[in-house]
Image 1 (cartoon, rainbow, N blue to C red):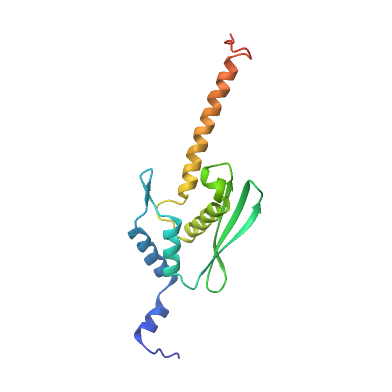
Image 2 (cartoon, rainbow, N blue to C red; image 1 turned 45 degrees about the vertical axis):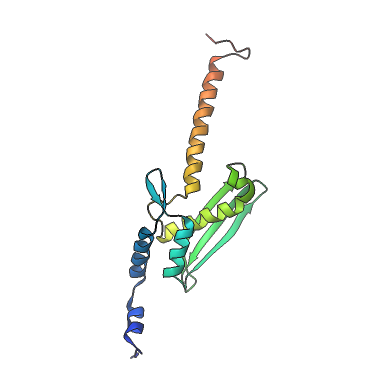
Length: 165
């Protein structure tokens, strides 16, 4: 039978990972986020802070899966203290997507991958998508609508600019 030196040591041993996660999620909800389209988005920096505070013996790594001059794909992994994979998150970025990516494509991609891995781990806040992913999706939706509108114009006018009958 194991003897414990003090009550605190006994309590530390009897706290389950689920209880720690619940405490971490409560702490995450207490911290301020950014209002994006009416949702309280917790930044990746805030989620990393909570992860380090509540899971100090866990690991978080990133790996570049694919990289070209204009594109990257990064994988983030959350590990248990026993080095077991608990969650993964992937992100991909294109240099020409936005101004941030023109100078910091890899950093932005890594941050998104970490945010996704932490979200899958359980530290997502209200939203899983990163702020940048949300902005990209809205921009892509706008671009698609513009392209569809341009195509309708092309379909209705000939190469001289005259309306087709």
